[in-house]
Length: 243
Image (cartoon, rainbow, N blue to C red; front, side):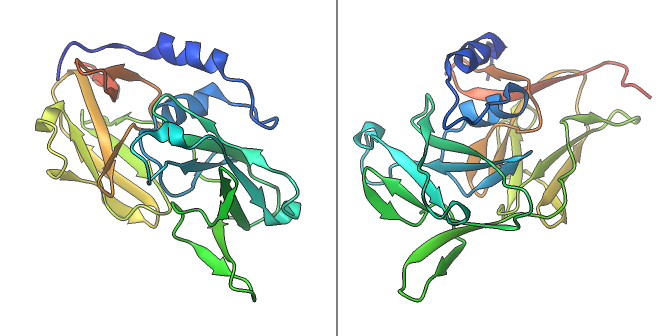
């Protein structure tokens, strides 16, 4: 991969053009790369004080067959419809503020008028009538704030990935010829994966592969595009690392 160029101005332009959804304030320092860069829908994610729900049409090749996606939550007595917005990759996204003092959220989504459980959330519960509800369990403690990469005193580089639902996380980049299998992250504890590499000084480009799906690094705000206009995360390793 080559001919990288900065993508930051484009991201900021898109952020400026996005209006808040249902009063939700989009924090660009947390949301921009992870949300605007999503190319696949997946299980719910907790980012800071927000729950990120995603949806992608699985029935039609053309994502524009789906016009509207929304969600209603049990703790609101299902009275408020929170509408997803759609990013450039046609992924429907809902950044929902986490309520205080709740350790579990129960919800259902509506897709063009059809109510259902969240097909991208494997956690479900049924009521006495057999209706299926999607469930997200929220850790009671505030998650540690991470930032990638961490350059160690010996010159090595540590990258971390955090996800409650991930089974396997690997690293693909120019340093391994974009092989998605050669560098596996170790699971240090439930939901926290890491890998330490020795790389040459200079710029490096990479993506995480989470259960087979490539994704940008949510803990690194620096990104670039390759010659095919795919977004990748990037960092530059200095010649003399800080000690």
